[in-house]
Image 1 (cartoon, chains in turn green, brown):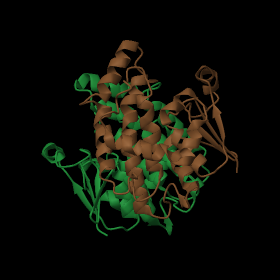
Image 2 (cartoon, chains in turn brown, orange; image 1 turned 45 degrees about the vertical axis):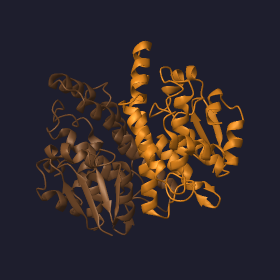
Image 3 (cartoon, one colour; image 1 turned 180 degrees about the vertical axis):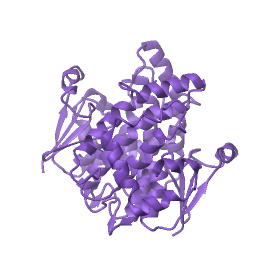
Length: 219
Length: 219
């Protein structure tokens, strides 16, 4: 069944989908819609949002759902990136992913601020001590610190690791105005985890190809 | 393995967990924390959020994750409320649930508005035509209208139906200041769906017991 991922040329919330399918060796078309093209495209798309995934003749939205699906059908070293056969482990993977995704609340809100200075101030505050993104980075950092295996959940790579890796690294890329490139420096466990995931050969290979400039943040 | 759900005496985002476990005949303790007690409790709870679920010796958070788990282990008429063995159907269930939960963005933001008049005005605008909650009600209403079976996804009851039922009905309950009790009237498919779910005997039985006043909205 053919798969096509449709999103902007940015990691955004869909990057774990791309990485999961890649690690699983699942062929997919990675359609990247230029931002300026979205305006005219939007009216023809029912939920008026991206990402969308074409799976055979179906068109499905909602990045969190797509990520779980991509992980369910992608095996890495013989194990699916989402444990469909173990409800309790799946719950812990979902829980971890949802804690990481808490950052999209404040981050998403920041995109709606029209005044550039106000937007940058809002973001800077969110990632500083006491801020709404900072508190979740701090919590995840503590969870990763407690992991015996070094993986986010359990003893092997899951979509929980991929989500943390894909969603956190752009914060320090400099591509988000107002968020300093030093914003993750204090989180030693997040950094150690990043190194662990970035150095998986298949991950390294995927990000060594310059599909988009921001991919440098994953190296 | 013993299960305890911990939340406020309110449906909130956790209600689908309670209903799914009930429909599945799974024993659980339903601990409802009075709002005024939460302040002192909060510091002792790592993610400083509710709901939490105690499963054996584990304590897990994140309502969306808990809901998927509850649905995975709960069978209704012989089928789990979340199709763990069918990744594509699970994706469609997740997608639908995520469209319904888009409403929590604006609704959650409204709880943070301290000025009562401002809060009520924000909410009223969200559920009126052009508003951020209205657009998602409209979209889900159209999806339900396309269903041949009358169920949200596929041909049988899933957590997608339960989520829509549990999350939408409180909007018209009058318990949310600023949101008129007429806010769902124009959505005929949402109303038809509500009737369908509310009239399932096990659902009817659950809400006929006065666990909390707002449960009237599910009758």
